[in-house]
Length: 435
Ligand SMILES: Nc1ncnc2c1ncn2[C@@H]1O[C@H](COP(=O)(O)OP(=O)(O)OP(=O)(O)O)[C@@H](O)[C@H]1O
Ligand SMILES: [Mg+2]
View 1: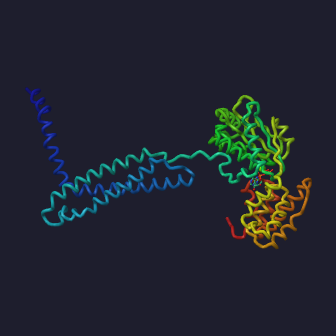
View 2: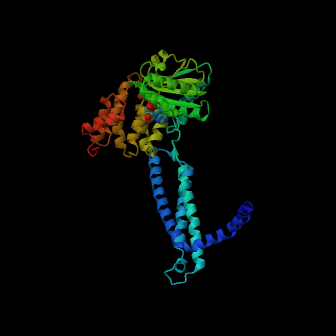
View 3: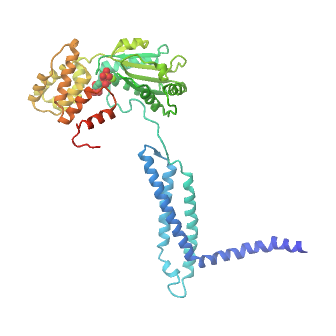
């Protein structure tokens, strides 16, 4: 008998209570807990706003560190704003004035019920949005670095000799029998500019999966070179020694099917193995080296070397004209300008320096003065030309602060900008900089 009663209670009475009493109780609850529901919603919104501010601060910090913020975070923040706005609208609903008890003994029950029900539902939404904050981390990611040459603004397309040389070097890099190619020529003739353009071209044409570049300089710093290459590959070293990093770098380079490593500005031979670059057992890895000195390239065992020569007269003028701007369209100036350009002896670095110094100088006298200041030296005396152009450039610096900094660059052999700045500040060169 008892079993029968409990079965009836379980199977018949409970569902009836569930389907009749519970919904009625819920509806009545909306009327009774109207105030509580809104107090609860207000508290939840205050908490949501605090969370939103914290996330916003974290997003800003990530952005300052160069991170890209994930779309999920942006969507969540939008959702938070929408929720706060909707809750505000509900709190400001004009029907509240009739729904409360303060308006007399008989509040508008319909408004009270509807508002309370909406507040309860809104609370659930707010709760859901708050829970989702745990799913939006990490907030962002570090985008891959742009490749070598992506910031190079120069284009040698107009300079026939450079265009041809670029084509020849790319052909050599395509040659399966060549793994080390060299580029050499005078200082300032345009080797670095050329290899950067080549880097961009081979990357754009998908000749190599990866192109990395490091500046070697007169005093090579192996750790700095390893880190430069690693940065391009998005590799973070945990190893603390040169040998350890070399091993990691070798492993990483090997994981690329095809990779071009550009080592720019060699002044002496470099132990590639010590750096972590090995061509022996990786056919997909090729090297492009630059140096002022062919001897160095040959000691590094390059298989084909390209001489970057000075520009011919037409190219030199074309570069000068491009740099100096419209001022040389004036017929009176033009012939002096052509002579000034000739004094730069086809060396791009000088052509650019001199053209920049004379940009927008409309007076024929300043052009004539410049012509007298630039010494004429034949090709063998290139050093003389370089000094003459340096002196010219120095004289055209705008103030003593710049001139002092220029001279300091000349006596400091370190290639670190930070060290240069420290010395300049220590020597009191900057008049308006204290930190
Ligand atoms: N193709 C070019 N178009 C425009 N300007 C150029 C070009 N090539 C070189 N230059 C100018 O000459 C300057 C020196 O060029 P670059 O640094 O490439 O010479 P470099 O041969 O690498 O010299 P270094 O031996 O001192 O490293 C550049 O900063 C740029 O102003
Ligand atoms: Mg260079």
